[in-house]
Image (cartoon, rainbow over all chains, first blue to last red; front, side, top):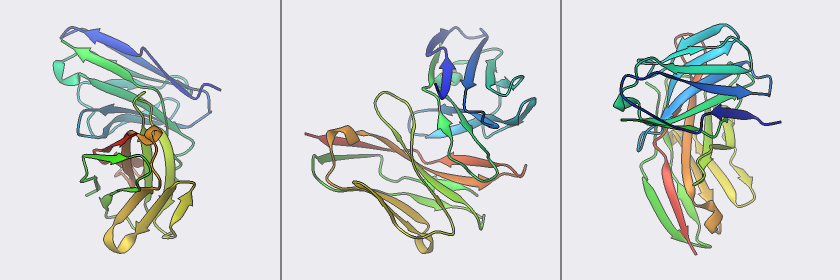
Length: 114
Length: 117
């Protein structure tokens, strides 16, 4: 039981390049989330998904797209990376968002955009 | 508005000292949930506790204890007899109901705790 895994762990992009971050969970959780963590700002929700095939915007969605084609995977895409997207990205999953079960987090992906 | 404030940016203590991490929240919801997460130097986020708004009983788990007071909108976290392994960033978070009818977490900015040997 690996919990929540994220790929890759580190990445450096040049401005304008694109990339996809992969999140996978093996806990059969319905809800999945993408956050970004910036110094002194805690974590902020980018997008989330309440089930396979559904996604919704969070607090800071601009510049990102997501897809949930399979229940266990949640992809975060950057179409044209900008230096402002330099951050640590965390994926999380929970059994249910409606009753506020705790969220389980992946190890994070450190992204640098130059 | 939903907001979590952790006014203490960084705290440094000597091993075996007790330390309290403050968390103050704002919410318009009548039902809500509060969480504490630990982020050690390795970077992962570790769930510590969840508390719902109906339960104001304090909770103790080993050296950890939590004091939830609705009257002051606070959910403070105390570590008794701190240890070097407690060194981490600690986040307080609030689960709130979004306009979509779904719940999301809003996090405080975190408190970095350094425990010196």
